[in-house]
Image 1 (tube, rainbow, N blue to C red):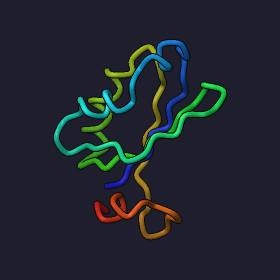
Image 2: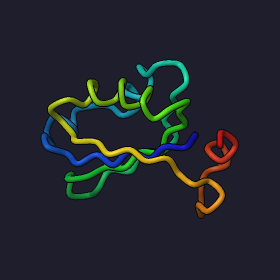
Image 3: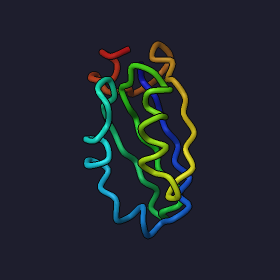
Length: 92
Protein backbone atom coordinates (compact mmCIF):
# COMPACT_ATOMS: atom_id res chain seq x y z
CA UNK A 1 0.00 0.00 0.00
CA UNK A 2 1.05 3.60 -0.54
CA UNK A 3 1.14 5.69 2.63
CA UNK A 4 1.79 9.39 3.06
CA UNK A 5 3.14 10.58 6.38
CA UNK A 6 2.73 14.22 7.36
CA UNK A 7 5.39 15.27 9.85
CA UNK A 8 4.74 18.36 11.94
CA UNK A 9 8.27 19.17 13.03
CA UNK A 10 8.54 20.05 16.72
CA UNK A 11 12.36 20.12 16.92
CA UNK A 12 13.64 21.65 13.65
CA UNK A 13 17.31 21.51 14.68
CA UNK A 14 17.18 17.81 15.50
CA UNK A 15 15.08 17.08 12.39
CA UNK A 16 17.63 18.88 10.19
CA UNK A 17 20.38 16.68 11.64
CA UNK A 18 18.50 13.46 10.83
CA UNK A 19 19.24 11.76 7.52
CA UNK A 20 15.98 10.67 5.86
CA UNK A 21 17.72 7.87 3.98
CA UNK A 22 19.24 6.50 7.20
CA UNK A 23 15.89 6.63 9.00
CA UNK A 24 14.22 4.95 6.03
CA UNK A 25 16.98 2.36 5.74
CA UNK A 26 16.46 1.27 9.34
CA UNK A 27 12.85 0.34 8.78
CA UNK A 28 11.40 -3.12 9.07
CA UNK A 29 10.82 -5.43 6.12
CA UNK A 30 7.73 -4.37 4.25
CA UNK A 31 8.31 -0.60 4.43
CA UNK A 32 10.29 1.48 1.96
CA UNK A 33 10.62 5.25 1.63
CA UNK A 34 9.82 6.43 -1.92
CA UNK A 35 9.86 10.23 -1.63
CA UNK A 36 10.70 12.87 0.99
CA UNK A 37 9.43 16.46 0.82
CA UNK A 38 10.60 18.84 3.58
CA UNK A 39 9.14 22.35 3.68
CA UNK A 40 11.50 25.21 3.07
CA UNK A 41 10.73 26.79 6.46
CA UNK A 42 11.45 23.52 8.33
CA UNK A 43 8.03 23.27 9.96
CA UNK A 44 6.63 20.31 8.00
CA UNK A 45 7.64 17.38 5.86
CA UNK A 46 5.76 14.80 3.84
CA UNK A 47 6.98 11.32 2.96
CA UNK A 48 5.63 8.74 0.54
CA UNK A 49 6.17 5.16 1.67
CA UNK A 50 5.39 1.70 0.36
CA UNK A 51 4.23 -0.25 3.39
CA UNK A 52 2.59 -3.57 4.11
CA UNK A 53 0.44 -1.79 6.72
CA UNK A 54 0.09 1.62 8.31
CA UNK A 55 0.53 0.03 11.74
CA UNK A 56 3.86 -1.53 10.76
CA UNK A 57 5.11 1.83 9.45
CA UNK A 58 3.75 3.74 12.48
CA UNK A 59 5.30 1.27 14.93
CA UNK A 60 8.70 1.96 13.35
CA UNK A 61 8.51 5.64 12.46
CA UNK A 62 6.90 7.09 15.58
CA UNK A 63 9.70 5.87 17.89
CA UNK A 64 12.37 6.84 15.30
CA UNK A 65 11.06 10.43 15.26
CA UNK A 66 9.89 10.71 18.89
CA UNK A 67 10.37 14.22 20.27
CA UNK A 68 11.18 15.50 16.77
CA UNK A 69 7.91 15.23 14.81
CA UNK A 70 4.24 14.58 15.30
CA UNK A 71 3.13 12.21 12.54
CA UNK A 72 -0.17 11.68 10.73
CA UNK A 73 -0.61 8.72 8.36
CA UNK A 74 -3.00 8.01 5.52
CA UNK A 75 -3.29 5.42 2.79
CA UNK A 76 -3.37 6.81 -0.74
CA UNK A 77 -6.21 5.97 -3.11
CA UNK A 78 -3.84 4.95 -5.92
CA UNK A 79 -6.62 4.81 -8.53
CA UNK A 80 -7.51 8.47 -7.93
CA UNK A 81 -3.99 9.79 -7.31
CA UNK A 82 -2.26 12.05 -9.83
CA UNK A 83 1.50 11.81 -10.29
CA UNK A 84 2.09 8.79 -8.08
CA UNK A 85 5.55 7.42 -8.98
CA UNK A 86 5.53 4.20 -11.03
CA UNK A 87 7.37 2.29 -8.29
CA UNK A 88 4.78 3.35 -5.72
CA UNK A 89 1.86 2.71 -8.07
CA UNK A 90 3.18 -0.80 -8.74
CA UNK A 91 3.01 -1.51 -4.99
CA UNK A 92 -0.66 -0.61 -4.85
